[in-house]
Length: 166
Length: 441
Image 1 (cartoon, rainbow over the protein chains, first blue to last red):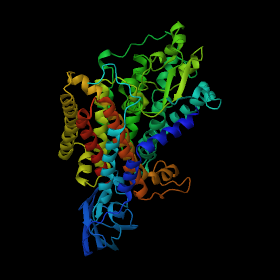
Image 2: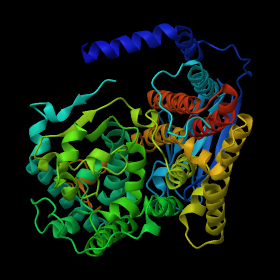
Image 3: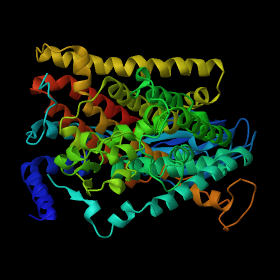
Image 4: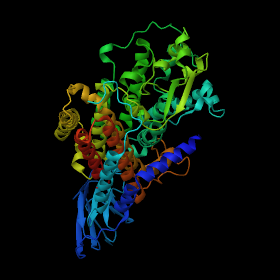
């Protein structure tokens, strides 16, 4: 039999045996979760940037919050670039930079130093969590589902070492 | 089982059998290696502006984990420049295979065989990772040190002793090569048995005898056996991923330890480089400070006691639940194959975050490799800050979930019952969720 046919047949057989798990995996990843959300607020957040570190390193806000970030550099020039929000700031030492935006996307977003400040600059990172981190819950559930599926699959080709099962 | 012998392909076989293509690639990698050492030593001290840091730790290190190992196992070793000068000296020529029984060099000491030294070398790279991965000078000195040590060892010891027993990257690639879809094997054992000269073994820089090869961990895919076999009895097979661990490989205690070191360093690197903890980054970076000593203590406790301790607890519980009479030592190695898919997928997911955000640094350092404000290609200063896209996060989740599935499946197949596999599954779930939390949490 052609190798591609064998591969297609194995995939078909896997899909037939695990259609429910595949359906469940799709549900875990994409079904909307109706979690209660707090009302949006107006927030002023001061972030201090020093060599390789943002303080606070993690920020938690609600979805829809109107946020003003005050970036203060305490040593050399630093910046702040927020993943997913196209927000870029630059702070000279001793001067405060301000930017306002609405946290209209839920999830966890990294913010990074936007101005080269030394060897660890590419890894100067902070975290902003908007609402609940549903993505992490979905990810963990998907991993556990993977383990569950692995427990169900019968072993057909596995050859144990000579000692046999322990 | 699906298999395809690449040495029969009219398109691929000439590239495998002829020494020229491999030599040309090796010449390029050697030139790149020397250039990297020079840029690291004389170029800018800022890592993100220097070719050495960006090409070694962003381009090459990512290519190794995303391309070379998952698709070709130890394929990088076949073009690695580090053992080249020593090997050419051993062979007394660039295009010659190893001379038969000519070597007066020593065998590597038995007490130092296995993956122990590689595991500790990799542990050192993890311990000093924040400095090594960001400092051009340190990167250059490490590369220089590796090529000098490899050369000296090739003068004293047989074949590729450095690659087999000392090279930390060799330990990493060798371990995960067991999962890769590429292998070199003898076709007909009877032909090998009748062949008195064993030209394949004589020519192998790795000291492997293809007829006895059960694992791809120590096969560098150099293709010398294919070239010197007078009976055309060597095949280069494409095989299903992970087939080797599902065929009942016999892991050793040193491989188990190496597998655990890889899990620890993947977690540690994800926390240091991708986490938001500035104090941890500073502690890992400022070598010699009191914070650094606390970091060393925590790192070593995690690597040498916590991770092995958790694994030991899982295996011990597993054997107790199965009321097995086997020794703990044999159980530790017996169950260890499940560490491989867990570790490899953990490293791949880490690389997606680590490298994807930094790819924009690659073209600018080609334009200004030394960080001296040159603009050879008109691309200097074009590096963006980079960000993790939703697609990258999704990929990371899928990769980790696939690793949890693969590891759990391997553990299940090694166990005699669902009851026995439960502690192992808890170990797998803990590692997987910890990685997810560090990467997308």
